[in-house]
Image 1 (cartoon, rainbow, N blue to C red):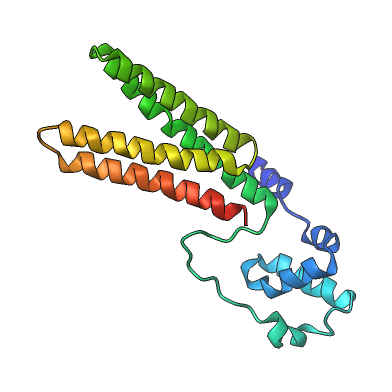
Image 2: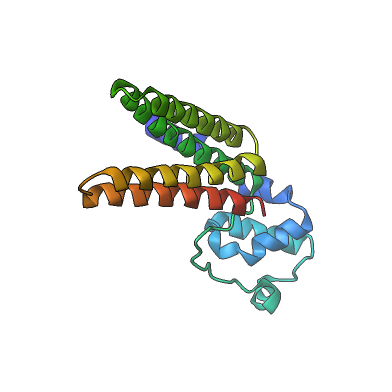
Length: 195
């Protein structure tokens, strides 16, 4: 019995939500009705008929309400501001965690007897984490551009380190490429979120 109570607790009143929409928002829902749950799409159609936006369900076959299938994209289009903010914060948290890598490597370099390099790496990681925290708190181009610059700086450092190493292991290169790809993709996605 407790299972059933939990399910009904999360049921959503689509009719109430649809009634709160403005006419233009309701038209957008009608255009994308195939992306919504069946109950929500039905509520939107009923509300549109009630408001006389459409005369009947037959009007949904017109070009204006034709459903366009989703196209695969490198960066998904996110229309909802709340979802944009959640994604921005999520990417920011990932970037924040990435800032731990230079901090940890800096501590390793300190223990290896290279204090100057170790301190620079620790400061670099802390600055990276500061910009990432800024992205988590609010959207701004400044930390994103700064992180792009820091990605380039860190790439120069990593290439220098790879040149010094006598033998390069494939797995090292693979991990480096994956980490940089994820960081650059996240930063580019943040730029896309602002549009």
